[in-house]
Every structure is written in C-alpha cells, then in structure tokens.
Length: 164
Image (cartoon, rainbow, N blue to C red; front, side, top):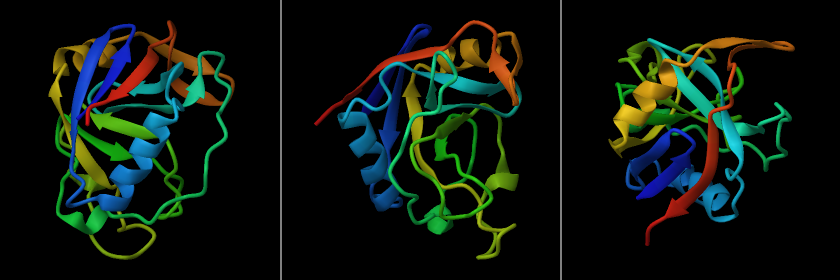
C-alpha cells in the first residue's frame, strides 16, 4: 500500500507486484527516495486521467533513471481508479510519471507488441481517496508553455508514504 498525500487529500493505492513486478519495484524505489515529494499532477483531463510524478510546481521536469520494461500485457485493464505508467511513444520508456484513470480507458490496454498496440501498464488501483481523484479531475486547466491541460492552481503531491 502506498499513499499519495496531496494538497487535495490522501489517495491510497494498492499495488499489484504479482502482475507488474518491475513496474511496482520501480514506482516504490522512486517513492522511497522521496522523488515524488513536491511534484504535481501536471496534466488533468476530466473524463480521461490525471497525470503526475514528473514535474515540480514550477513545471520543471525532474531527472529520472532509465526507462523500464513495459508490463502492459499483464492482463490488467485501464479501468476507472487504476494507476498506470505514463511513457513516450517508445513502449519501454516509462520512468517516474504515472496516471490515474478517471474513466474506463480500455483503448490504452495492451493489444500486441507493436508501437501502436503495446499499451500502458496498469500496476495498481485506488482503494481509498477516489473522492480526492474526482476533485482533482475537476480543477480548471490551461496551457503552460508547450504543456496543455495543466491545472491553473498546483495540485501538489506533498509526500508519498509506503506501508510495509
């Protein structure tokens, strides 16, 4: 269990280390190092997802380790309330950024091992705090430089706690 303590409230996550072992280990490593402390949800799209874990409140991207192997073929689906890894078009480029689905986004699921079909790896789900996720998805957004859908008022991940 991991809790994201935000300025909107707490979001408690159950991670699935059985189905996404490398992804969960990667996420926990960042969490335990304090990497996520002070980062923001920098991309919020109601009806789609809320994305965070890579930028500070000044929209400066944080340095990360290398990308990890995409485990999207694990059978987990991008359903409402699940957490998945964000990545670039390269299927194996996920580092620290993640998103919480606020809708059933089955089109993000693994279909095949092609650039278009690889999908986005789900590695857990919200078990408490979906009301917080729903509050975040409703914030006003705008553009910030080349970034779109950025909350006008920062949605901050103040700290992340990991339960043994």
